[in-house]
Length: 401
Image 1 (cartoon, helix red, strand yellow):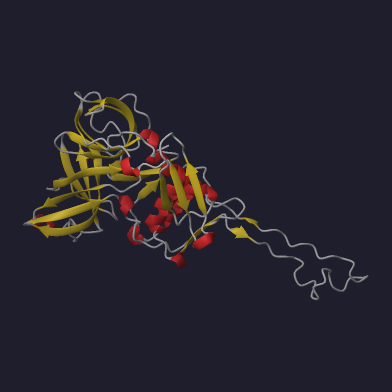
Image 2: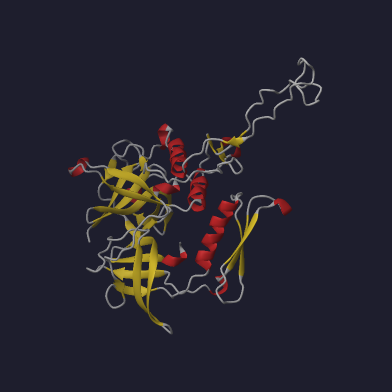
């Protein structure tokens, strides 16, 4: 495979170096609903190079480095940390979706807020006898009840994520040119009746990255960043940055690919069962304190001894949010045997890079003391290595809903 590392200035998109002398120490990782990244080192002399714009070629929170493999961008991201180490200069890169973490949301985003309309008859019964004052005859017109409260406008979950990213990139020195998918999730934040509103307000100094991840977790959708070349040819090409959004999940069942011992699987991590993490009952505790704290208990009787897992989700206030979190915990804690990681080599049955994080693949492997297994797994992240192998991090598909 042909590898090269490309450096660009984040705010301008300008390519600074088409072939950075970058030696990998941690191969490029693409991560489902996470930033991924890579780590490597360069010679200190290169770290001191100045680009045509007068700034260092590699500079924290200014430069991005991407790995290109056979003409396709396979990973990389923002240079977030550099340091000297053993006579070399270490460079750590994190995906663009790492950028929101640590940055405050400085706007106001509200969905499903409880609205109490003004009472048109307020103040017309000053003596509080239940009748409108100064009617003729007196005490002849009762004061109507005030209009009931109702739930206000609600925002689609993807629109909320886009609003957070729009806020982040609204500053001149924060434009990553990350383009988000524009379709709807068809999931509205907050309860329809206003009983459980969603609010992201500047006075609470919320963290943008945590807000995005909380929305994705509570409403069970995936995101995945992708970087690719524009359609322009030659050295006028630019790298396009996209954030894919998928409900209920990204990826697809890959019946066209085969992952099997003796063919393209070169190593497997020790298979795992739940063991002490097993639970067939979950108690979910929501936001609040003491006896007023919302709680929900979910069970999945399966003929085994009762095992309870307690989880605190301080972002959950409604029964729907508690139930969604509880179901996710039960799914993950009642699963059977699975293989957490695979090392595979390039093979016609599954050429390197032919899958994507989020895809489901059928793993056919031999497990000592168990025998041959065929289990569908979901790809959570992948790591493409220069030696022509890849490492896939997996979870059992039926444990993820």
